[in-house]
Length: 631
Image 1 (cartoon, helix red, strand yellow):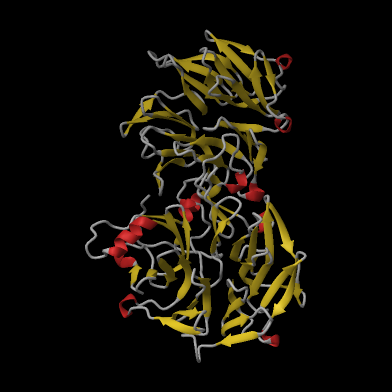
Image 2 (image 1 turned 180 degrees about the horizontal axis):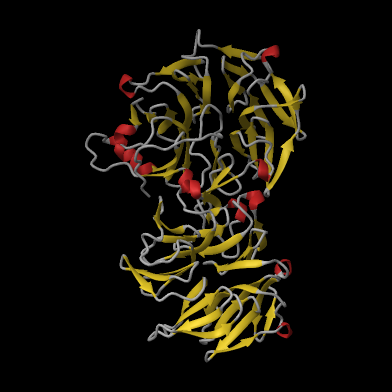
């Protein structure tokens, strides 16, 4: 199975050849909420529907809202001709592209071909409106019961009276089922029969109904959910046998979703029963409506707004899932398959979806981690913000080197073990090398470095050490033991070098002016920046995966094709094609597009899953302008 994952804060990005028997956990869905502050006329979402033109419709007590993916357009009593009240209780799409709208005072309107067609009103509030296969209109009315209106008539014929009817549905055999305050009615040839507890039903009002794609009837009642199996109703899950179920949905996987009166949403899948409530994302626990749209997003109507869940490329790991902090600076993919996560309040290890906190504090305060490194034998080394270099020993952080015993600065942003097993430490005050005998060698910007602020370290196949600083790049030649500055062309205007990727022909550099390519054979440099279509100036990390380069930035994670980038850089003035890229940001599930630099590793390859791993710094970003998005 090939999976691609970006962990940012931690965030996970999936391009998954997923096993059919697994589901994305509810906690990993991307959540969005809309309410009156977002343009809705009311926060109680009575009904949700999607019409054939793709619009999503939201029925509320203060009117109808149409969502185009960006914003809501409102329709109230003044816009909907002859609707007696703005309160919209029921929405039902029709097979020919229309939408039936029914309201709090019995008003019914058909929206089709951008026109409002007023229908004869019902005598009471319409809780649900349904069009059967023979084009008869069925009405579930508050207090008055179930009525049908023939396709050739405007008269409403009573079928069940003096009850509150909540929902009506038709099964594949043409049987009409009605959910009412008396319970469940079965209607055959317009003759109703009340189902009884002897058939497995609870003695309670039935609020909602669903016919699955397999033709099975599911009911939601005041005292649990039931599924009709033959002639007997059975509970789909013990935990759902007593919950008050207010709405039902079957998704594209065949999983069942249960909206409840006061417990949020449950999903029943091959992976078991999961719950999502106000403690972990929902705006409220009272669920009024459920819908899955054509893009497979799940929409949840609550009494505090509408909530969307979708299997976005990114999902988050934070304190709620066991991390020490929501502020994560660096992520290391270990050769044993684990992920090491360094943040402002310590170090964590993630393995088999379980978080383990690495012990260790300085004078009672947790270490603030800036950089991580795995040694060849699997040992983990840690660079910190104020405590120098630490080593993980027996699941505990042990001080190794700091300013008190020879390090130039306690602010360590990059670590490297070279092929001679020497430890290189990049700090805010220069570069330190720890030789195998434990002796220290200091390099400072007064002599060898263009800047003492070290941001990145990498070793090429010739064992040369590439050093990224706040003022350019320098290479340490291990044969001559001399530093060779890499002079950026003035036209590039690049200064900061945040990260490297070195392949057989090139050294790629993430800079504050784009992606710089250095050719090993002749030292020729080219740059992929805004002029060639890159959407940002500043890049922090470069990670290859399959045919792509993944670039982290303050405006999201950018994927570009390696071959196309080389083609553009080989002939930047003669190439007519523009850069094709995919930008992943908040719209793809990231809580923020900001993936800051200044720590290492920002991104890495996961050994266990052959994945891509990077981190996201906590923060907010308001996107402005138009960015090209291309697959």
